[in-house]
Length: 119
Image (cartoon, rainbow, N blue to C red):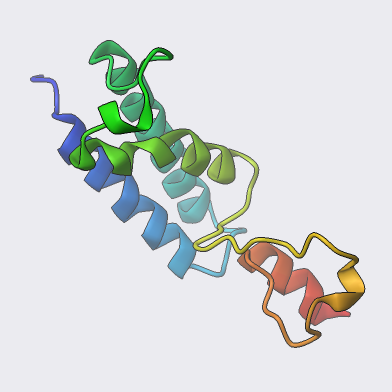
């Protein structure tokens, strides 16, 4: 089998992640299979990015091409899926006490939303 390009592999991983985020029933075998497939695809992306040397410790921000910036999130998305979360958007937490956060703010993850609504 021919090796996929980083672009097509990343697109596939993103599509899988979005499908998982659209699903609320995480107790089904299908969901677990889709989750495992998405994690595997992100891991393949990370390996390919490493082989292609997309990012190196001696590069500065100016050295990155705009086309490669999307791949900076590979490790983050993989970790979110592995941890069981489905965060489609992470918002910055207030640096002050949590009492200053609005009570109507939606949790950034569906997993948190499920637990918040149970209380």
